[in-house]
Image (tube, rainbow, N blue to C red; front, top):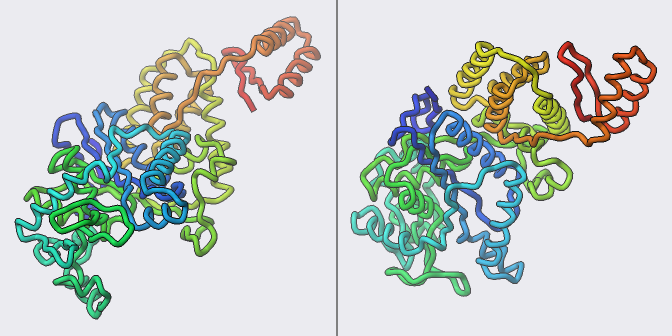
Length: 447
């Protein structure tokens, strides 16, 4: 049985879906005002890998990941670029899809955008006001945190702790609130900003409300899994829980999952440190499959350290796996051994999607394959395991001239003309083809 570390309870739990063999999963997507950075990509790849493993285990996954296309950063960036907010968002949504496709990320079942759900957002806020969980103040609408049971449990905080941290605030927005901890559900429009009509005047939604609305509209009042980066535990996911459960009276999500951060050469990525890296730029020099391998093969909750050596090692490992996949099939019947590899892989990945252990098992599997065990059934399973990590290889067909040279070399060896055989081998090396003579015949790899 798959076990998941639930951030809400801080413990490992058996995964029990609401509907048998179906996973309803919502993962917070990017705010689309720029190209995604390597930290965004880590989250996207981590949850794509989790989704793929559920599918490997036979589940149907409804995977929803949003685009935040209404936000202060978008408004500012659009103004600086001389574009409308929609034009800017459209540009970077297209870039996100292009860049993540190169990372082998499967398209989401749905990618909702905030601007598509404005009526539902206004209705959601109205219900919270009617139920006494929210209030209007000078055109803004705030959520009453004091009425939320177990507020900030997800972030392992208490309301009392937060009250101490919020004391003494005197900024203009805080003065509008009943409680400094109350958060915005609806913001009154500033001059020149994009806005919508609402019962509280022209304005736009706060950040947290959008995900609650889109998740419940598309997946139901209670979903199986809600995921995102560890930086979203508080306040974003904390506030999502508060407002969603206040409206529906039901648990918002049964399992909360958060991926770890990306460091650059052991330092936290930051624009101020000059180590801020976008995936769009990185893909100009690093193969997408190599970058995917680097991001996907660490257990999702652990931090990951980006270095040139790590990328080099990922490149070497991808090449090894590709050469293994390209091996010719042999007459091998090792059903018990194959089943053992499958069960060990499942055991590793069932343990909270432990990608590091899962990929270690795949390399053991590859070593066994390279020792002469590779029929079609074995190849199919190897391909399925690789696909969990977004690693997909096409079967490569050698050029007819290369195949002719290999056949000519084999004939030379048969005739004991080893000088000719060695000359052909050297010629193939120049073509990037290395040969390995085994008891099952000659095998080749591409350098």
